[in-house]
Length: 375
Image (cartoon, rainbow, N blue to C red; front, top):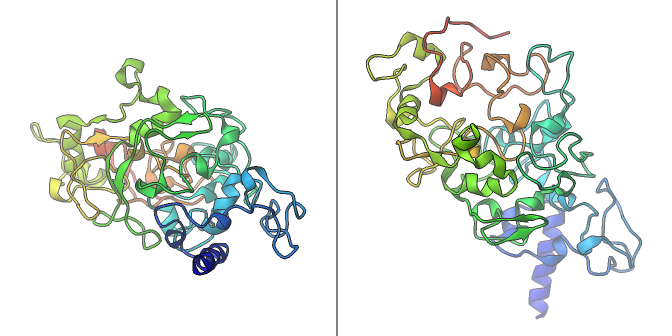
């Protein structure tokens, strides 16, 4: 018993000091006092933190809801998951985010702190604040507030005032991808009826590449529909499909497409769409898809039965584009990103002539005039 108690206290101390999260969560329930304080007292000193995370919060003998170390749920997580390095999802600066955070998986919450993410026409004089860059989690440490426009989840009813890291991730651990909630779990007003089946590359190592990327197998769209259900009702609502098979035409477009310049230089021929790409090297991590056969290192493009999902166009946390876009949907050329707003420029996987990455699936630029969008 004594040895076990020492190990638990050591684990909690390591957490507060910023130890890797895997060692703390370890795929299951972690050391309780890494996040909770039963009496807010240790040797007569308070154990919890103020809104900035720098000092004592409530007085000894009084605490926060759920006996948390912080008044805010997200701040409990950000005590270890903000900054630079492995397992960090909130960089220090929105103008210079960690490439590992910004260009892989969920993206980077630091863009919530941007003063302008509008790169559309007139973007410099018509700023859009960072709350529109993705999921507006509320944090006292980072000074982010409730989304002032979307008071409920777009396409659903989940209250923006309740949005926290723990709205999607189970801090007590699950066996699912990235500790995301599984089917049958209930969080605030959200009841999950799906589980994401995916594999993730090692956190904090490098941005994703065509040969080293997350592998999404199934369940992503149905999982997101927990809060955004109206966006998942298919063609009956005349909206973009999600959680549905790509079909032969879109899969073929994806596999042949290798950028705007290549598409224009290699126009359609017969039933072949534009481009000189080949299926074996067609995978683009900026436009992922769901497929049970996808692996962390596979470079193969989709088949007709592969599925489009929410993460094909969006990241789960935030980006420097509106609506957590994997690319900015409001600019003609990707090289224009960051120019009007001064925000972080999302890396362009092709050249300065590249148009929207919607063309990876829909191939609409084969007869366009080549335009160098580089400012």
